[in-house]
Length: 380
Image (cartoon, rainbow, N blue to C red; front, side, top):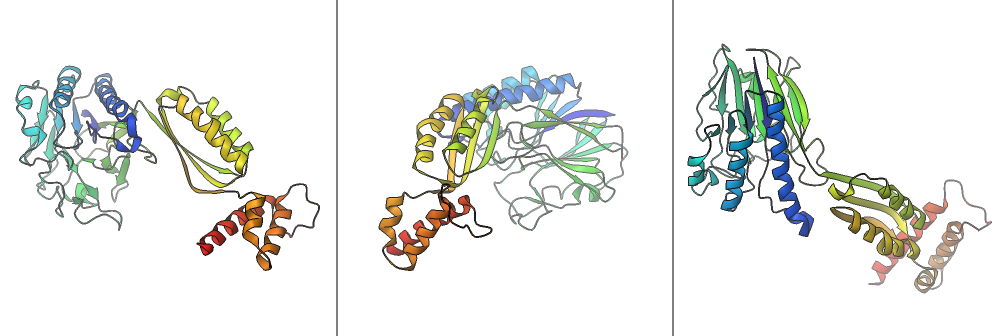
């Protein structure tokens, strides 16, 4: 029996331009999350740790960061650590793994730079290191097909061919590679969310660990590592997820029609625990009048700025509601003015006119906004 931690895509040194000035906090968080991975491996009494590619963001990372990562692995990993180069830190002539620092690492840290079997206790590892940024070749294709008299574990970095949109040069990995190569487990990196691909027998032997610390909004099932236990050759891997991330990325998608909805978002923000570790994207859709826009800019945005580590308000699907004077100025005479007058009456909650079935105040407001902006575009 063996037990190990499977992790990948630490991407140390990530520039994180997508969070502007908060990039340094994200880089430090990735180091803290890495420490959490190593601590979990110790608590789980693991035999070894697998890092399935992209330990670093690229091969140009600063020397001091490389030393920090090496020191962390050497001092906090209480078992062997096996690393393969991924596409971000590929084993090119200028690879980060060719720096002399690695010659002075602890005896527990192993960069697997060759496609050849490695003994790891009761298991044999089959590393598939990458030596270029992109390729059309399956990195697992070299793995020999042999009988399972030992626990066989593949380590690779690339895209599993289970979708039609997989790029041809993204290190395509056959969906049945684990079956073909008679592997008990294929530890994959490259995709940032945990993903378990079942074989014909329903057993998941091909698995992505995802990144140990979430990198952007919309990454589900990230910020984790996997603890894997395999009882022997051909035994089903027992996999459980370990939370390792230190930051929380949240997306709030909210439909708004006025200032009251902005107030609701502000009240919701008051209930968020430890907001200083939260990166929040508020996605607004619907319409906002002048009062609502003023409240959003004057109170919601400053509140987000003061509370959260990082925030952004996405207004791509938000239509500002035009004022009555703007509508009248645009309307002129004729059918357009009649339509605007009719919609304005329906949009007015105090109106006592007969409202057609299926038309609500909210629908009328949205229609006015769309009509206004379409008419503006025609005029331009």
